[in-house]
Image (tube, rainbow, N blue to C red; front, top):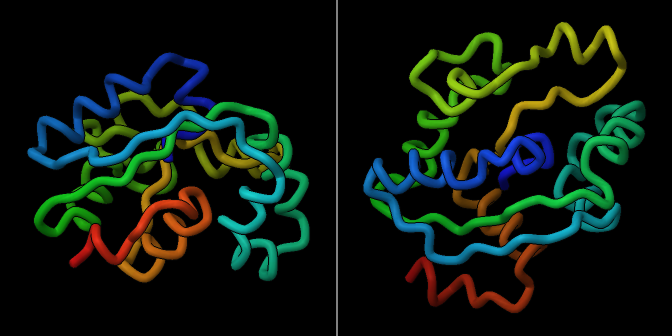
Length: 147
């Protein structure tokens, strides 16, 4: 998911180009306005663990544009996560997506009681990728994709 801060800064194509240059396939892509229902389903485990996060998610995502992509390739999850960099942009290597274009940090976000603007999200496992694809693309037949 390319998050609202990256969309607003017109970083969609630069981010996608990094993924293409890695030799990965962007097999499905969609631009959406994020609803509270979809965002809360996506971040369900975080909502359970942290009561304060609902406000932060609502302010960061709801009624804003996100770009969702399904990426395929050998070891795609690990390769994409390496390309993205650390969740905290201030700790990301300068070669990563967050290192190149990130302008925020967890420390600053916490001081301001908001979500960290870290540009992009990627699933951390196949099971989470499947879960997230089912949330955002319920019409997508995931079994044909991973078979």
